[in-house]
Amino acid sequence: MLLACAAGAAAAATTVRSPAELGVAVSAQLACAGVYVSGRPAARVLRDDVRALAPFMRKVVFTVDDRAHAVTATAPDGGSRTSLFRAGVGCTLLTGSHEAADLLAQTQGLVPLPARDAARPWPLGDAPPAGAAPKVNRAALDRAVAAAFTAQRARHADTRAIIVVQHGHIVAERYAPGFDRNTRLLGWSMSKSVVATLAGILVDDGKLALDAAAPVAAWAGDDRRAITLAQLLWMRSGLAFTERYAPGGDAMDMLFASADMAAFAERSPLAAPPDTVWSYSSGTANIVSRIVRDATGGSLATMTNFARERLFGPAGMTSFVMAADESGTPVGSSYMYATARDWARLGLLYLNGGRAGDRRIVSQRWVDFARSAGGATTSSPYGAHFWLNTGEDGHGAKRFLADLPVDTYCAVGHNFQYVAIIPSRDAVIVRLGWTPEGKSFDVNRHFAHILAALEPAR
Image 1: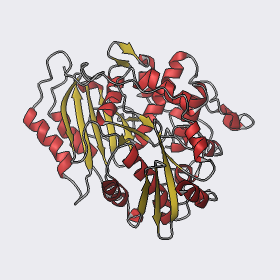
Image 2: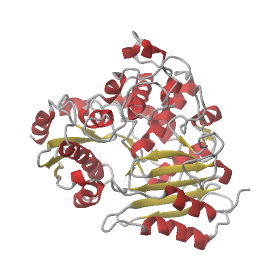
Image 3: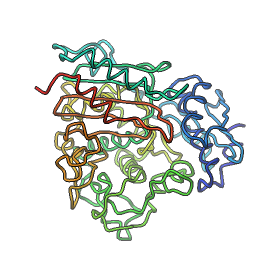
Image 4: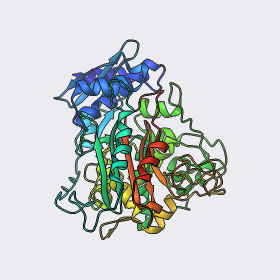
């Protein structure tokens, strides 16, 4: 009954019209995942996630329906919205366009993620790897990691996890109270780097081509048919998409009022010729996710199985959950959850040239593409769904992490989620947290202090 009522209330929603409506939609999605994906107590999710994130969410309350595996959020003047949990694919915000039974049917045929053998050496397992650990400055490293947790907002956790890896060894790992190495944490836009990695596997397989027209049927009859997959990955498609996180912005209507997020983004007209303008776009990432889904069998189950069999399982990243929209496409822009160790494994995959242990997951050619600016100019701060630290001139001038090496590149998500890959120091630094709106986390300062405590470059 809960699902039917909530879905009916949202059936006419095609846009997010007010902060209250936005707060209810965001809250339903975050609360559902906090309870059912991260496995955290509902009261803590309400206090530390929902009400802590932004002012417009402080009046939200939610109801957890354990029988339906759903959470409904309500607020004055915001109505109500429900998010439905589906085992293996996380939580889906309902718009009223699909029956719950049809959504549950999308998960039929899922292949379970293999259990990771914890006794295997890191990173494929959790045991210490062979070889001598790096000679870090232990006291300085511990201080630097602790500092990332002590700059906290009263009552609410900010940093939730830090992991530092050098020369293949975990040299620092710390969690805020209530979180541990088994807690799945939201990557927000770090999800873009994961969906790009799946696209890279398909490029290596010859099933997708970077320089060919992107396989988007909706563009066949107009100038958008010239957009390539590479241009989508570089965020140089020319599509008009407003990455504005407020009512009326394309990103908000796509994430919180659309049953088919890729189709929403595909309807964007051209604002500029392809490859002439760089413009960050979560819509682009969801178009890429749909392309990956179609190339791996055309369904939520087939794409999820592909990710598990070709990326997550072989790389030891066995906690990953890719939440999907109602159309059955994983939300490649925003909604992937994994443990901090698995986010670090993603960074190590790239640090190690596309290998996990003795198995190649993606080619060195793909890794080089992902970490390089492309297109008609090389002034972009962006590779293939990874942020670059090469600066305005491509050689380090005015780089966004001014005290980190020029060769640093990162998966980056909202609320200062970071997987920083630093080849010149053979290191990966992961930070996951919940920095509220209007607050900040000084990634450059904290990561620079951590890096200074590591073993010097060899």
